[in-house]
Amino acid sequence: MKFILFLVFSLFFNPIFAQKQKYWQQKVHYQIQAQLDDQKDALFGNYQLKYYNQSPYVLQEIYFHLNENAFQPKSYYHQLLLGNKTPVIFGKNEKDGLGMIVKNVLVNGEAAATELDNTILKIELNEALSAGDSVTINLQFETYFGEGGSLRRRMKMFKNHGFKHYNGTHWYPVACVYDRNGWDLSQHLDKEFYANFGTFEVEITAPNDYILGGTGILKNESEVLPDTLKRKLDLNNFAKKAYNSPPSIPIIREEGKTKTWKFKAEKVHNFAFVAAPTYRIKRVKSKLGIIVEALIQESNAPKNQETAELTAYIIDFYSEKFGKYEYPKFTVADAQDGTEYGMMAIITGI
Image 1 (cartoon, rainbow, N blue to C red):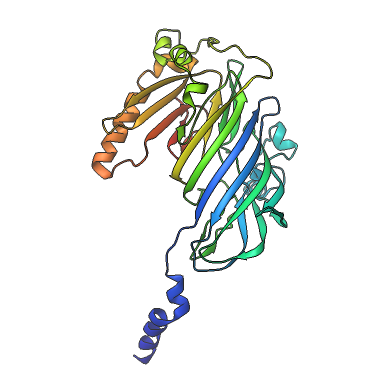
Image 2: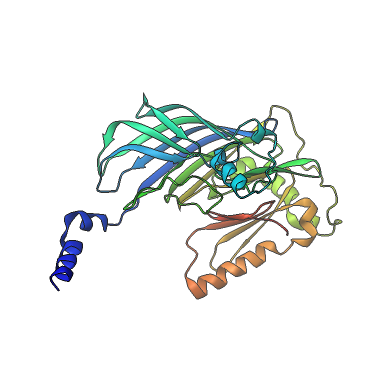
């Protein structure tokens, strides 16, 4: 009996235990400008993170996930596959060891020390970050797409009728979660992802013939998708063409000419995008007023005329039965290797 009373007292009155039971979420604000290079199949970016320490603890460092480093020879993921006797075939960038490269790291404007362990990057803070304070981290990064090979990766490049398509997923350094269990320093081993909710302001510059869709609201739609172009790209225009036939070319590519697509999303835990010259667009509103955007490859257009409407119906149905969808927009994109991201789903087989 004395032992039980001692245990109860220890658990509920021990200040260390009590502190560990506190709940918090760190706050993050990403500002990213990236250039899509479809010759090197890579993104080259400038990155700023405002990190708010809302925990009760003082932080000496901040950790980041560089998930694309998993898909390289001798990575931990590669070793896991070899241990399970799973055959591995690497694509070109993967063979060259090109995943995610981070350089020129600044913490509050001053150079900072870093330490890399495959998919986990530690950035040491020049000054301790107290509870309630924030810090700004700037860096440059390069992230390379893979062609998949035998690896189960989400960020990839694939081709459709000779045109390149890009799935931009886990493509920037992601601040690791710091919660009451400490830092989440899980290496990427093809498992689910854990990330902070925050704000994303993202600009992606791509060749002028690419159509993009992504997490959040497109802030400069009139610039990158003027009404004349939207009419050309309307999915309804391609309802009667032969399934899987070569796509038309509504935008003539001009070498050296680019467009910058500007997105903003709030209260999401990741940012994903798709990019391809062959996307055609359909938008509808759900009964709740949610904008639903379907990005469909033109070759698949005849079989996907109702994708936007069906998605809107699903959003309304689940909102009624289980709780309202809280975001103003949802994008469903026809691609390869699909999965779900903030405010969008990349799906395959449609």
